Amino acid sequence: MGNNEQSARIIGHFRGEEMGPLVVAIGGIHGNEPAGVLALERLFELLAEEPLVNPGFNFRGELLALRGNLAALAAGKRYIDTDLNRIWRVRNSDPEQFTTSEDHELHELLAAIETALEESPLSELVLLDLHTTTAGGGIFAVTGDDEPSLSLAAEMSVPVIKGMLSGLQGTTLHYFRGNHFATSLPVRAISFEAGFHEDPASVELALAATVNLLRALGCVKEEDVSTHHDARLREAARGLPRLTELAYVHRIARDGSDQFRMRPGYRNFQPIVKGELLGEDCGGPITAPAAGYLLMPLYQAQGDEGFFIVQDYQLPSAY
Ligand SMILES: [Zn+2]
Image (cartoon, rainbow, N blue to C red; front, side, top):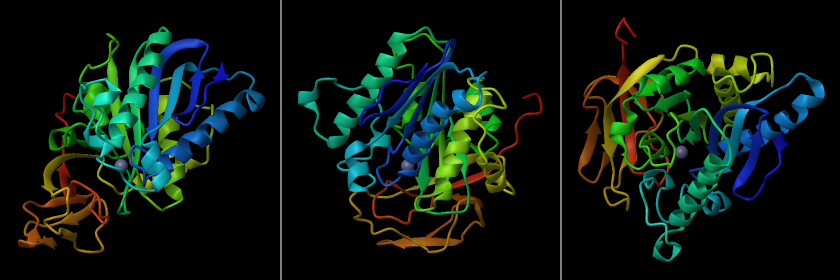
């Protein structure tokens, strides 16, 4: 058992003694979001220390932690040529056909995951994709709309947003949910937004969310890998809507030609009313087409979406 495999791509590969899920955790799919990488590096330090302070410690399954966009992380940019979280689809695996830096990144990520899947008997494949946002004001998890992923995300004690996959294409979640791996294992996939890019608290929140996921999956026991960050996670989630659904995506031109500018001061989960002035572009003012909560207002140069609007979602009572 232990962290016996490291490289620029692989933060760690922790193999437990008991059979269980393969948890693939990725940080830095966007190169200007190092918090997830730092959180996973810290988690592997904690996992290495745990048997020393806790002789009964046991890990069920495996944790494979990966750095997402290496070239963009080194450059401190969201991406080099194209957004790595919009190109996860069945691909030509011949490197001579690759046209972007991100084609190579995706190829290496998939190779690492496929190798881990082949190596050991596993019960389930679970993705946790760690991100941060350009606006502060709220942490949240995004999942597919399948009940097993939604309930796992809810067990992380963070707000959950459903319906996001219909507003995007080619994300890690789409790929994991799309049965593209040569395995018949059940697959669940969650991405977690840990707060503002530059906020040191985002590292702690990403770490706490990852440990909560490992607990919810039974990889570690409730009392193991204790961090002080769980209380912070609950604190950060307090007052935020527990379950919301995507209502609207404002798309922008990738080349910046529509000159989209978000009005300053918006935060994640800020309530907005229909008709509210949210920004402007070369066509004039941009107003909210619906009431709800604002999500991921864009305050950086690179991005394909200007903002999202989500609305409260009630689960059917039989859920
Ligand atoms: Zn991101």
